[in-house]
Length: 364
Picture 1 (tube, rainbow, N blue to C red):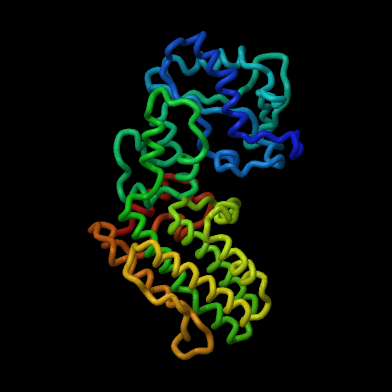
Picture 2: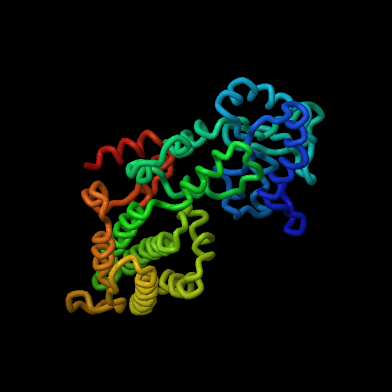
């Protein structure tokens, strides 16, 4: 089932309606005064605000996370789920509340005459957050290693979306706590992101030197991705995974200047054009960095790479300057590799809390 553009209602709007017009009245009658929070957070394109009519063909529809105290979730969770299955309307704004599971991953929606197989999940915030992030930020501030072990996509999922009601206060507090990295972690990650760029910016020209046009283009693509993620760091925005990286980058003020440069560098078939556009992009991002005031001013112009016929920013200067502002002893002792999704992009790895934590703990 898909929806036309004219009829499309965003997942966030649909979920708010589900709560306010259906779930909340049922709760008020069945469990009057029950402390709870209601939100749409976690996985899903609608949480990041990028759902479209195309999204409606699977795993999309009126859904909600209903957070209770740990005790209430244990004592009342199962009954609340059953009551909602029996009393929820069959449709919300024309969208069925019944999800039919056709395999392990894909849920299709369809009307039903019986109880609805709804997606109003009843749980406690601490357990859900631990399952999503690998840590429970309801009880304490995340440690440095906690921050480094959480992919930015997961942080975006927890801090994105919308909270429709928070009678517990826990969810609002946690979202504020996780809204952005602590200052020292942020500075360390900036140093690491600049370091990535410094390690490959000369390769675009070197590949071209030996007639490897494809290799030059591949390196340029890697650098474009790293520049986009660097801009998101500078603008204090969590970078989502690849599907929504461009959409999120497009929302930044600097995107108006950078997008033509980055697209041009990717589209260029000749090294000289590619190099010119990349240099212009480097200089624009370097200027953005200086404007933050995080480090001492640095020259932002590209220059010849050790006398070779190609120009680079020498981004290691920005990595070193950022690293100098890191005063936390633990962060200063770490190599400039950053958080897990700065040096790894394997989906299965980033989805495994155990693997992420094990690798972060293994770093001296």
